[in-house]
Amino acid sequence: MGVDGLLNVDKPPDCTSYSLVAAIKRLTRVKRVGHGGTLDPKATGVLLLCLGQATRMAEYLADSTKSYRGDVELGVETDTYDSEGEIVARHDPSGVTRALFEATLAQFRGVLHQRPPAYSALKVQGRRMYDLARAGVAVAPEPRRTEVFRLELLRWDPPVATLEVDCSRGTYVRSLAHDIGQALGCGAYLKNLARLRVGPFALEDAVPWETLAARCQAGTWQELLIPMDFAVKEWAAVVVDRQAESAVRQGRAVMLESHVLRAYGLGGRPLAKLGRSRCYSVEGRLVALIAQGADRRWRPLKVLSPELAPSLDLLEGERAPERPE
Image (tube, rainbow, N blue to C red; front, top):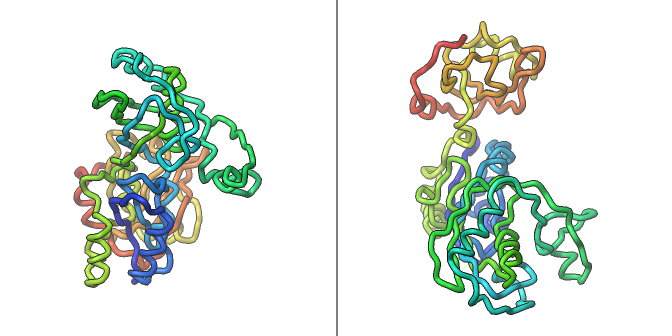
C-alpha cells in the first residue's frame, strides 16, 4: 500500500508552505504531497500536509473554517499589511482607546467584502499578485466575499492589540488588520500571526516541524499520520454492501437506501437529507465521497483507491451506528 494520510504540522516562522511540502517529499520520498491551505512565510501554526491520496482532500480542508491569533500594531502601515513589508506611513494612535477599538471591531464581524492585499498569491491574468507588485505593476484586486464568525480582543497593550479570529476561506487577516487601522484613522499592520485551527485540526495537536523532521530521519514519521477521512469527519458516514461499493467505484449513480449496512452521524436525519456523505466498504475502507442529486441518486464526488488502508478506528470512535431511514 502507498502512504496516504495527513500531517498536522506546527509551521515555524520564516519559511513558506511550499518549502515544507518540498522538504517532506525529500525526507519521506512520498511523491504526492500537497497542503490544505497556505500560510504566509512569517506566520506560524497549523499547516496540514496531505500525502498520497489525501491530496484529494485538500479542497475540503481549504473550505474549512479557520481560527487565528494575531497582534495588530496601530499607527504603522506597510505595503504588504504585515511585518514583511516596507513601512509606508506612520500616524499617532494615542487617541485610540480600548473602548473605541472594540466598538470598531463590530463592523468587521459577519459578511465582509474584503480586498486582498497587493502582495498575495492570488493570480491576475496568470501571474501572482506579489510578482506584479514587486515589478511595480499596480493591481487593484476586486473585493471578495468572506465571513468573520468571531472577532475578539484578547489583550490591549497599546499600540498593540491581540485578536482572535474565526473566519471563512479566503479571509486575509492582514487585510483585516489594515482595514481596522483605516477605520480607526491611524493605520495598522499585522505584526505576527498564528493559525490555531483548520476545521477539526487544532494547534495543540500539531507536531513541531523539528520533531517531524527528526522522526523522518529516524524512520518513525508514519506513526504521526492522521487518516485522510479525518478531513471530512464532520460529514455523515455510511457503510455499504458490495453491490453499492462496486457501482460507486465505477462512477455509477446508486439509490443508496437499500444498500446501507450501517450509518454514522445522521443526527436523526434520513439519508435523503444529508446531501453528501463518506462512503465505506464493509472492511472500513473509504470508498468515496458521495453526494445526492436531484433524482435522489447518489453519485461519487471523489473515488479513492481500493488499496487505501481501513479506517475502522475512525468510524468506531464516532457516535453509535444509526438505523438509516
